[in-house]
Length: 245
Ligand code: IPE
Ligand code: IPE
Ligand code: MG
Image (cartoon, rainbow, N blue to C red; front, side, top):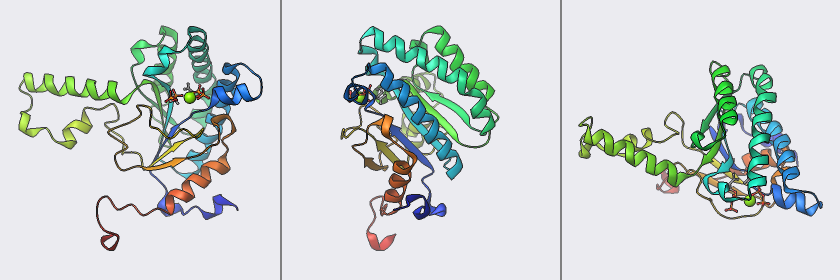
């Protein structure tokens, strides 16, 4: 039952994306306020980031706050924002120690000034690190991202920088916030919900999907290894036949 030993180092997913869901239900189950679920969720982020770095995964993208999450009660949004600021400030030293580079995707302009500034500081400080790239999706939604990309490409056509005929998958990918990243190989969603919730709609085209009932605050490194082992057991055909692989 030791999943870590079953992981084949030569077949690691290059990019793992996670929809970290279930913080609120975890807190409710224990009779606590939702924000305490988010606090516990941060501890799990720390543990999984460290594990991903140690395993040698190159990209870990974490869905931390969606465009739609702005519609939650103001108290919860405010609590999430201050948790975010504190976490980034407190964790920068650990990211440096572990050679982790922080990146973000999403509309940072919607964040409170201090949150935005702290994230940008951490991104700048860790920019020379060469290990794991930790990508935080903040105020992110795939439809928002796709609309931005369409606007950018339309502007380039208008400026005559490119011709309409030149627009292809590469041009489109390069207009997305994930332009320098490989597409996720593995998407994990916790908490038993079987949906994508507006996350990386373009980039997940051929990702392997892994759903677990485990709530995010209860997610452990064992669960993480288990998801990777499951992924390594899949045959990725990309439209071809089994015989061609
Ligand atoms: C995920 O947990 C964290 C965020 C979306 C910020 P939730 O807060 O969605 O927890 P549930 O789904 O209500 O249990
Ligand atoms: C998705 O979780 C967004 C994040 C994990 C940040 P939600 O809890 O917001 O998703 P829905 O509303 O259940 O689809
Ligand atoms: Mg949720």
